[in-house]
Image (cartoon, rainbow, N blue to C red; front, side, top):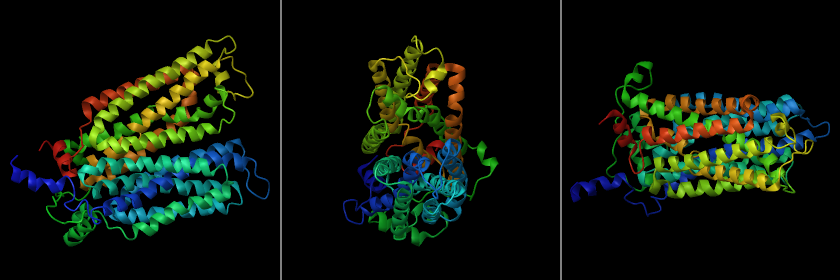
Length: 477
């Protein structure tokens, strides 16, 4: 490439006025969109402190029994699966910005219904609404951010989606120590309300505006975000304005589809939900005085390592971090399985049922040293997951699909993720019955190995490339 060509291509790698206040508006717009994932994280984390509070509630407040409590935690994933489908439809028809604005409504209404709840059905209805909003936000926010960011910072800004999710979860855990369930629900209305206010001042993405043939508005949006409208590489919209099954024969369509769906499936098959489920039990066995501290420790580790991932994403690249993350998860889930094998071979533990029983009612003959092996494995797993397989599938989902199928394709990916999360969470205890706990975690270790191999041989590196260059790669151009 000649010096003249390099000079012409430079605006694709960063805004010409990147150091100016205008050039920094892209960060403000990304922050406004990322308040959706923050709300999503808070809604996910809300059940952890709220369920004990609701189980102790005195009349006339609604009170949860064990069955209702399990539904209170799980119904969010079903709402989010529906939200993924709805978000895929909205993002192409209403646009990225309006979809983000609309998802604030079920967030606020859902938390308001929980705040005003007089019976269990109102609690479950409120949770279903917040789950619907979670599904929409988990789809639209990565798409919006990837389409407004220039390549040099797209990895960092895209990783901030997962960072805001784990910050939201940690915020729910911390505030749950001091607020009871109604006031915690009132607090849940704050992030989506702030997002509504900020997003009103942010532009629609230039790429979406170009698909609607609103060229002048696209240039104005680009000037607002990047500080310049010079040398904008217009995306090739193609003749197809939408998705239909015949498109799946094209390499530029089916290859990203396979990659996106596989990444979402491997993310959930890694066993992250199972590890999180047993966090408090493991901390109790390690003789922690306050086992609820486990949630906060897990939350802090997630936030720290997701922040590290965001900082190094555009230097290390997506594929390298996926491979390193997967290898850490293979090691930690193998050690986790070894812990269960050692404890279950002990004289006082003749059955897998003994581990599934509450620690306080079923003494387990295991040394504190072995329990610390479990704590170390769990913390290592969460750190490994946070640095790669946590944020990157969502980031790649927003990067790899052509504009004209992005709504349908990202909707399918989000639906896959939430359905897999529901199935893995629901069926993991059954797998533990069949394979015993150590076999179940060694099975997740095998899935992590498949995830590493898939990353090495099937996932392209998107670091430093424009979205148009990524599409051209899949099309063989």
